[in-house]
Image 1 (cartoon, rainbow, N blue to C red):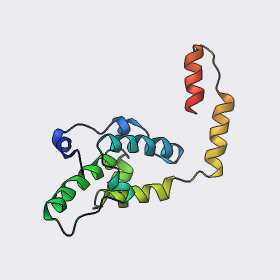
Image 2: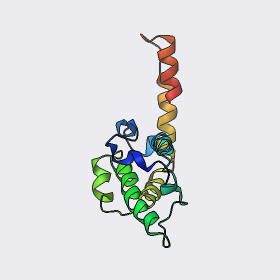
Image 3: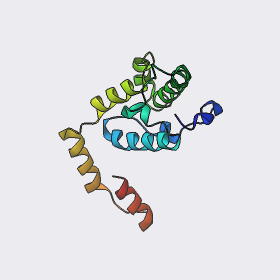
Length: 138
């Protein structure tokens, strides 16, 4: 739980909350959230290795403080409709796993819509670099 000195600063983990969370961009959202958690050395709270100590009381108290911070970062980035259903969760890992299970599957309609967007994008009025970035984002 290194890096515990920055949790109380009130700063956002990143601008992940500016993304529209959903099935179409779950992979972008999860990658951005992973990067944000890596900067704070907190990925262990979502990928499993960071478990609450049953032996060391000080470590258990640190875990009790850090898990809600990670949970709040996740909750603050998913939007109101999902927030209401997840706000009573106690573990960041549980919320992370539930979101992955629900949104990390690309069905045929998402795949079709993505190809449709790629095929209909045009450079009209955009610089070559703007066009490239739009196309690359898709």
